[in-house]
Image 1 (cartoon, rainbow, N blue to C red):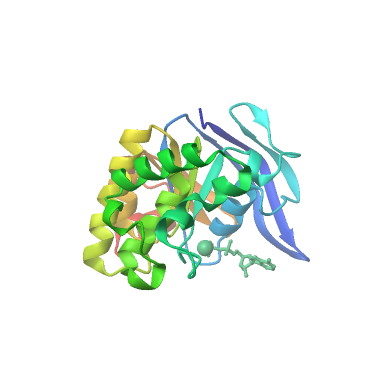
Image 2 (cartoon, rainbow, N blue to C red; image 1 turned 90 degrees about the vertical axis):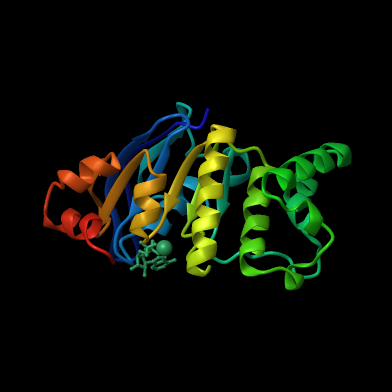
Length: 238
Ligand code: ADP
Ligand code: MG
């Protein structure tokens, strides 16, 4: 569960073409990393996949099912952003369970899922704290926990570690890799960090100006970039 198909996705804002025809197929359980310069449309594409934004044309399917008329909450997707967007007045436990409360999931079921996710992310001792009482790394783990409890088949991460300092980035990256192994869910992960891309990805998708330049396994892109743009992006530090 969690395969994704993008078929000629285009998106314009007014007269500006931001996504210019993207075709991509992501397999069940794959870890797919999106890279590309700022403004090339990565976040817009994630928002289209999540249903937070409508494409101008083209189709997308999850597990073979067309998503065009399916609202965000029913797509089996959870998104983790760069900004954690936690509720400051709620403790960690309620922040993690809130979406489930809103979906009408029973209290014991919410408690069970929050406990399980907290254990995976080593958040157990922090469940009664409020966001202000957490470090940046802990807040980001709560944001990831909030996604996990929804048991999505597809996770979308939009530069989730870019607000963390270097040491925390490494730790959280390893945690995300472990999560991927443990959950077996499909993950699409946007980053501008090459180390993250090279270490996390089953495949890397290199975007440029609303189009895909190249898709491939990290070492294939590294050793056989299709063009100078890809070579510059994967081959040298940004
Ligand atoms: P990336 O995530 O790759 O940095 P984005 O998807 O955020 O790129 O943005 C791609 C382009 O679309 C940018 O030029 C941005 O200014 C534009 N854009 C994004 N969202 C909107 C919007 N709601 N209205 C108008 N333009 C937008
Ligand atoms: Mg972005």
